[in-house]
Image 1: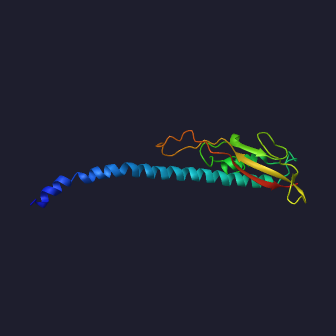
Image 2: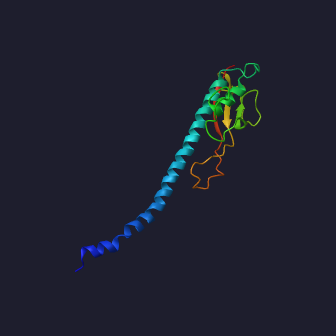
Image 3: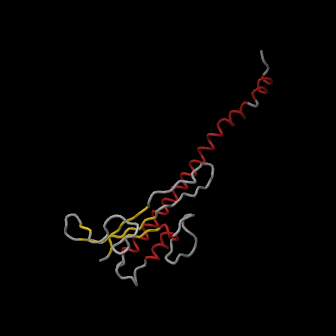
Amino acid sequence: MRSPGKSMRRMRGAVAVEFGLVAIPLITLLLGIAEFGHAFYQYNTMVKSVRDATRLLSAYDPTDATNYPLAQAQCLAVFGTTDCSGSALVSGLTTNMVVVCDQVNTSGCSGQYKNVQTTPAAETINLVQVKVTGYQYSQITGFFNLGSLVFGDISCVMRQVL
């Protein structure tokens, strides 16, 4: 019969080995969860800022060039303010990535934004779209090779004043 002291001494290193085997996938899983949460946060922040910029432009007439707040809407989408003050809502986002599509601004746009028929064809409306294009995800951990991950276009379309 074995003495209890000898078997405990032999098994003393087994717990450390088992922890080492379990820790690697556990740490990878935790870092993946953190990275996914950060990507979701960045995407959600941009969705909300694009919606706010679209809402701002929907209240103005795009044919009135003196009062149309195009630059302010781009600042709102990137910085959360209309005067471009402060830091960007998400790192790496610039006003060059914000594209506005309406009946006047059609560069880089597809679709119809002026005199769009409603269903049933009772009236025609004008639309405004604000979208962020080409945003490259900036990761927080650096553990995963996501340096080339580019979000798809994030856009919002609203009815615009006539």
